Length: 369
Image 1 (cartoon, rainbow, N blue to C red):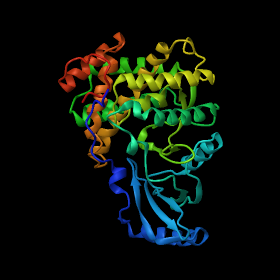
Image 2: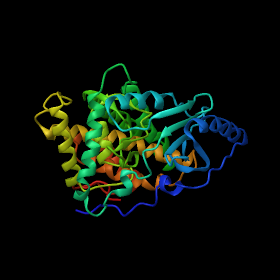
Image 3: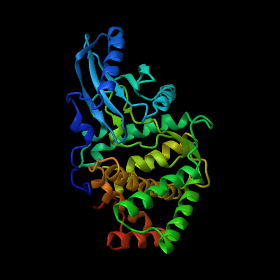
Image 4: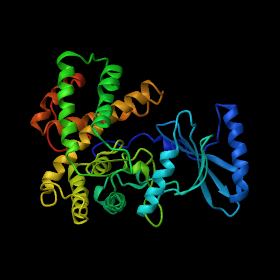
């Protein structure tokens, strides 16, 4: 089967690679060069090689710099007034301990928000995926599954913040607050508010019933690097302890890429088999019934899709990053596909249809946009 959506516009990661470094704040630029001079001697960094590597949806950006020996390094520029880098440092150490291939923190100026990291390369999994031949990507996706299982097997309670009811509800609130109200101009009140409140309560209850593991929270091809000896993992600073279904749902129902369900099922069932053998799915009948597990993955994916639709609207309307909103039809497609399968979600499906002016989704396809 071929990919359901056309090739997307170039990601901001690709567009910014190898571009000149500019600064909007002269004081921060001065502080950066003072810090860089201090670490350049230790690692023999060549200041003239400095360039922009990538940026993301936050206020962080990443620069690339080379040493005299030809070794490449990454510099994180994370203004402390907008970004707290402590979770990145702490979770990077946790992932290294678990055996994952993540950037090593070599130097960190906590007060200024500058960090020197090892470089996992410039190719993301998204860059090398064959969009027209899903099965040609099976090996890459199974590498991602193996990395995810390493992370989940290292799980311990009390180490990461809980992905609890309060956090799930706050994330879901992004959909009415930003997608419906701010983007679509819909007044979220009366029966519509009641429908959302009831639906969100059902979604949260479904997802909290799942066993808890470490959750990356944005485990998708754009955050996985083609590296040696294993896929590299990035953008993990928001990791939590929560539903085991979250990261596999994130991987297979991607924010920027949609597959036919036969490929989604192929990878998900392989994850399920490995996870149950590792003792991660000893819950109800999950260890013996893939269908039961898959239904829970769908409910978890629904929570994520509602959240991300709200986030993408916020990125456009508040943060001036309109490229993200272009992908919201993909999330509406995901939401409608899942809501069409479960009786409890019929009111949500009708609500979405009214807002979007669409008809009820049918079939098993994801991301038909």
